[in-house]
Length: 243
Image (cartoon, rainbow, N blue to C red):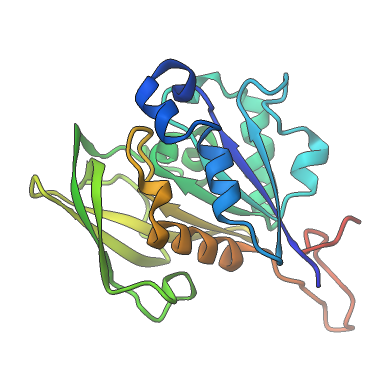
C-alpha cells in the first residue's frame, strides 16, 4: 500500500508564549495533530517556522509531500516569500493543501485564492455549532449533521474568498454570527480544503469530529495518478512516487 505522505506545518509560537496554549498542546499543535491522525495509510511528519532557514520546508520535504496541513496565525509575515511560492507551485502540480484556522491569511493560501481572504472576527471564545451542509461529500463522511465546539474564536461573514467548489460546513456562533467554515477549491492539479476550527487556546484539535474531518480531508486532497491516452503516467506528483 502506498502511503499518503503528510507534512503538518505550524508556527509553533503560541506554545512558547502562552501558558494556556502550552497546557492544551504541550508538544505543540502540530504534534497533537500528528498523533491524532496516525493511521496505516498515512506517513506523517511535522515542520515549523523556526525549524531551520527553510521553515522546515526544504525542496526535499516539499517534493516528497502529498498533502500539506498549514496552521498559521501571528507570524504570517515571517514566512519567506520564496518558500510560499514553492508551496503554491507544489499545489498547482498536484499537492493537496489543507488550511486550518487563521491560515486563511497565510501567504500560500492567499496566493492560491487570489483574494484578500479577510473576514469578521471577535476576540472571544464562544460556543460554536458546526453544521454539515454537504453530507454526501467525501470529507463529510462519518461526520454528524451538526456538532458543538465548546469554545472557538468567532469567525464571521463576510469571508472574502472566491466562490468555493463545494461548501461543506457552516458554523453558527453564540454571538449570532455565521461563517462558511469548511470549503474546497481546486487550483491547477491540487485540491485545497479550508477548515476554520483550531484557535490556539481552544481544545478544537482534541475534538473527535474535527479530527475526523481533517483526516477525511487529507485522504480527499491526496493527489491522483494521471495517465495519457497511451496509458503512460503524465503527472509526477503521485502518491508514493518519489520519481
